[in-house]
Image (cartoon, rainbow, N blue to C red; front, top):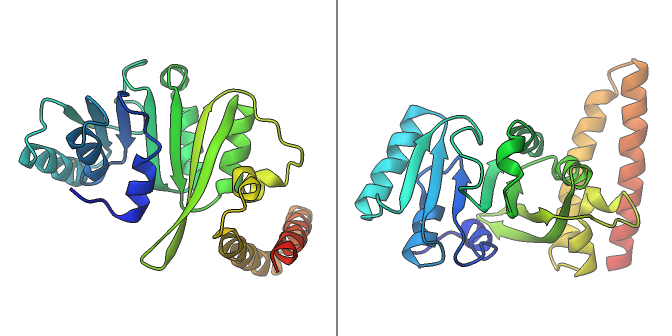
Length: 230
């Protein structure tokens, strides 16, 4: 079985022998791959809505993995029991949505050894939350698939030492290893900031003005980083 580049990159961060929980599994492609390849002895795949839940169950059944992949329907981490999964994957959601899902189940999160997260937006907010909640960023990577650029965060319990808080906005591990796709990632962030800034221009509230200044400062810092790559 072959995975698309984004899921394959996520799979490489799953430690062999661990039980993984894929939250919002869609067609259970990742758990099927991990179990079929012998990377994980078993897995849990969850979906909130009935349609995707049934699709995931069917996919697992067709692969003959019903006894090793438990497909469950439920919201966020609620279908999980504390301690039954050492690795949690949350991919394809907004960073703030991922944060809310994790924050809503502290008893489950307390027993997790690794988080593999692929936020579609707001990765900076997610990194900041992770650090504040006692997680360290083990690694980060960037993947291009079908013309889209994706960021993947890998976190484990521990203390993150950040010399400059701004690094959490752009990815401290990406900067450290000088990821070749970092300039493209920063350009993408700049475009997102510009869209937000354009929307804030029409508001005269003090909070909107403060937010606009914050974004302008971030854009200036990103421009500095981009110049170093030229």
